[in-house]
Image (cartoon, rainbow, N blue to C red; front, side, top):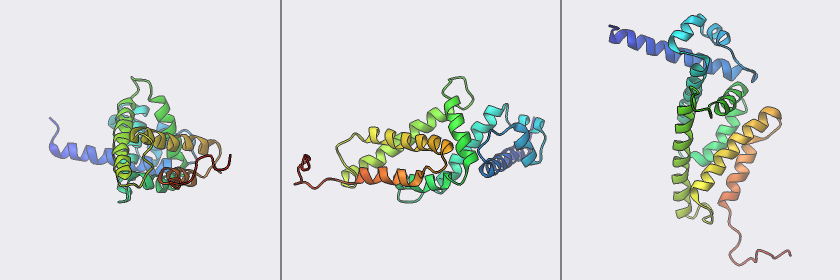
Length: 200
C-alpha cells in the first residue's frame, strides 16, 4: 500500500507538471500543444505524464483548472466585474492559454469529455458568484437595475469568452477596452428627467 509520503510526492510532482505546462503554454504562440511538448518542458517522459494524467484531455483539463486557480489569486478585492478588465489585459499576454481555454471549453460540451464536469461546474459557480455581485451592486445603486442580475452575469461571461475567440482571429482586438466599455454601460443611468426620444 502506498505510503502517505509517496502520495505527497506524487501530488507535488503532479502540481509541478501542471505549473510547468501552464508556463509553457503561456509562453506559446497559441498553437495546439502536444503531450511531447509538455513532457519536454517538464523534463519527463510521455509515459510519466500519462502516469499522472490518463490522457491529453485530462492533462489539459487540469491545466485549465490550475490556470483558474492562479487567476483567482490575482482576483482584486473590488470583485469579479472590474477584475475581468484586468484579466482580459493579462490574457492578451498569454495566447497559448487563451487558445487552450477556448478549444477545451468547446470540446468539453460533449458530456463524456474529461473536462466536461469541470467546465459545467465552472460556469455554474462563476455565474452564480457574478449574479450575487451584480445583485448587491444593483441594490447599492451602482449598476442599472432594469435587467435581471443572472442575465447580466451570463452576458458578461459570454462577452469575455467571445472576445477571446475574436482576439485569436484578430490580435488587434482590444479585449480590456471592450470589457471596460460593457462595464461602463452597466454602471451608467440616463438623467431621470431626460426624455428617451429627445433627439427624435
